[in-house]
Length: 375
Image (cartoon, rainbow, N blue to C red; front, side, top):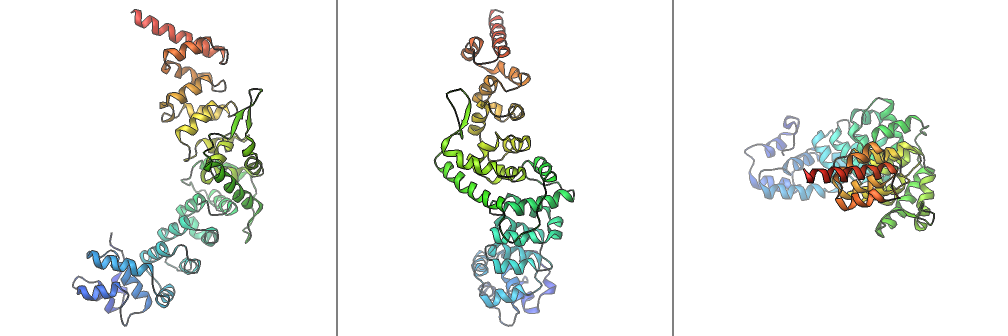
């Protein structure tokens, strides 16, 4: 897609290079960064436009040059009044360079595209810089979303910008936004701090421990003890302890940016907002849901959410787990009985490990099947 800029604002030599009759050799030289007589801002703009030139060789050369602009040219361009499209291209190419990012963020015509790129790729330092300008965040809510979903951005920063969105009535496209907004309203968000907060350090440690547990292909964070109750596995206890120290809003964000091990703990959290954020996490897969649906520690609300999700209840294992889990509301488990195989129905009809209502429903379903066969 051609870079959209106002050619009339460029110097005459630049307009000729980008015009329809420009000689190919001159365009190739310009794509290499050789444009005598032009100011750095115009040079960078010309190269940016040529990255999408119809001549594939010119475009390729321009892209190579744009990614490695000579320091004098880059520095000079960063002090110019560049077009929004050019700023976005610079953001794409130099998002990991804090010095360049700081200058880009000071540009009066920086647009939402550039800000979203910087927010999505930001490390902790750049995330702090992007989050500083509240007016721009409110003008471009997608930037708040990108920062919130970027796991490298501090927990305290994510809390602060989410609070900004909630306070100004913005609706964000992030997982479990309703739960996160409710948690923010109930918590006091601290002022911006140049140093990581206690919650930031907790989150960093939790991510490290959770990543190690994920690498071990940990099936679940809990196991059934001798008393038949779920207990946190010994190797998971350090992560469990860290998460227990976090506030509700930090836990909710962790359901989106945290590890699989953290997610399996969070879905069992005592706070309903955290539970519901965890069960709505985009990181959940069918195997995770199957494990969660067997748990007798998760809440009825979590099991109800699973039962109402058509995608998840396509899985026979998930349906079976919900039916046999005594915490599943009978209204939902009873609807799934008709999907069970005859062998499972017979086992349930005489099982002492399921509620009497499920035994009875299984017997009725078997009778209906037998009656149907006779007819």
